[in-house]
Structures are given as C-alpha cells and as structure tokens.
Length: 81
Image (cartoon, rainbow, N blue to C red):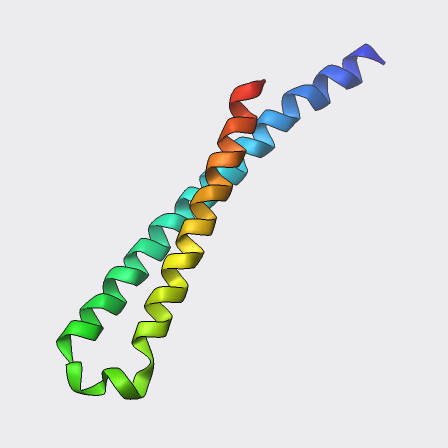
C-alpha cells in the first residue's frame, strides 16, 4: 500500500510540470499571433474597420493574460512539493 502511494505522489508534480509546459507553448503561440495581427493592422489601415482586427487583438491579449495567470498558479503548485 505504501508503494502505490509513493508512485502517485511522484506522478502529481510530473503532470503539473507538463501542464505548465503546455501553457508556456500556448503563451508563445499567442504572442506570435498577436504580433502577426498587429503587423496586418499596421500594414493595411484602410481595411481596419471592415475586418475587426482590433477586436481580435484585444481578445487575444485577454486570452494571453488569462493563460499567463493559469501558468503562474500551476507553477506555484509545482513548487509546493
């Protein structure tokens, strides 16, 4: 019984570290998408009102901030053990 408990205790930090790594990748992808949308926004100012790039940039920035907050919370859980 003691062996099974120690296996699961070692599994939790591994899973939390995997979640933190996946969230880090998401943050990098979101940053690249934000940069690309800003480039499109500045490259063609005539179409800014018709293609809703501003709303997309704002939504992606909010999503990036929420992803960062989740990453910080999971990182704190990894550091506890």
